[in-house]
Length: 248
Ligand code: 13P
Image (cartoon, rainbow, N blue to C red):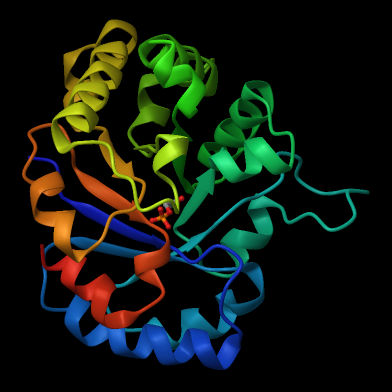
């Protein structure tokens, strides 16, 4: 049985006081559920959020990291720095990073490898653009991105991984993939894992859906057989909405 995992991706939102307000509202409720609840915060609030969630079941996530251990990489944050702050999860290869910051499959792969090496759990994002979907390329694109992201990742390493299928056209647009369509792509990703790593790993790795998840569609999405959770953007910024999703 895969434990459901619902993660909020706050993106570039929340000052320290705003973040504390949000997380203090979330943590009580998160303690009552068996769903794994993660907040992926901006770097600047991680240390304060860490203190606020101490003793609660909320897990801490970051939204990006660099693949080198240290060095002359102005403005970047290393895996060791995240570990130092007590971070559990790190989003890697979000479409916004691929789109606006030129992250390639190769970079995503280096980051995934480094995160696993350092004991962080990567939440690895894959997903097609609208143009690719309209050209019936969804499965090809997702296959390419998935195989590239996990190049040279061992069976053991895969045990730390969460995958998020986020069709780019559904992010922040209010449009969601139908739950059946999302499930189909996610089942396909699972079949790719089975081919490469065998049935045990493929049945163990959790795969989330992301893209305009909100209280009104969370139940339907979470009821699908292969969807193990959600990566939530906009709706994770308000405690009430996020908690409704968590309590799908
Ligand atoms: P929205 O939920 O705002 O569509 O964002 C999804 C997302 O990108 C989560 O990583």
